Length: 213
Figure (cartoon, rainbow, N blue to C red):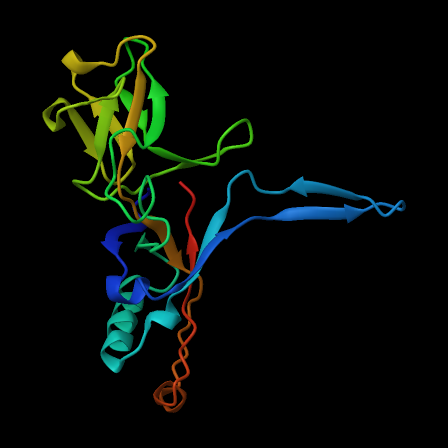
C-alpha cells in the first residue's frame, strides 16, 4: 500500500458489530427476445461496510470520531476486521498451514503472495490478501509446515519470502493459513452526529469501502 495508508486497525469492538460484505458490479441487458446478457464490470469484488451499527455508547462514538479525524476523512486508508471473513479457513477455527494454496514451487522462486480462494473448480474466485495479521501466518510446502525462522512475512503487503536454503522445490504445493484485515477507507468526508437521535436508539451511518491492492 502507498504512503496514504495507516497500518492501524479500526476500533475492534465497533467493527465486530458492524455490517457489510462483498459488492460486485454486473451489467444486465435485456434483449428484445426477453433473454438477458450479463457482463461483469469488475474482475474483483469490493467490500463495503457500515460501522455505525457497532456504536452503542458515547465513548465508542468518541473513539470513532477521533479515528476519523486522525485519518482525515477519506484521505488515509486503514485496517478493518471483517467478523465473517477474516481467516484463511472458517471463522470457527484457527488457521492451518494447508488452508490455502498460494503457489507451486519451481526451485527458484522465493516470494509468494498470500491469497484466499472462494469456491472450487474453474469458476473459483481468488482474492489477493494484502493485510495479514502479524504473527498469524503459517506456511507449508507439500503439506509439511515450514519453520518460522525459514521465512519472513510482510504484513503490509501479504508477501511471504522463503530463506535461500528453504526455497520450495519444483512441483511442490505451497500453502498458507492466516488471519487478515481488509484495507479500507472512510467513504465520506463528513460525519453527521445527532445526539438526540443517538440517545433515542438511532445509530449514525459510517460508511467504509475496501481499497483494492
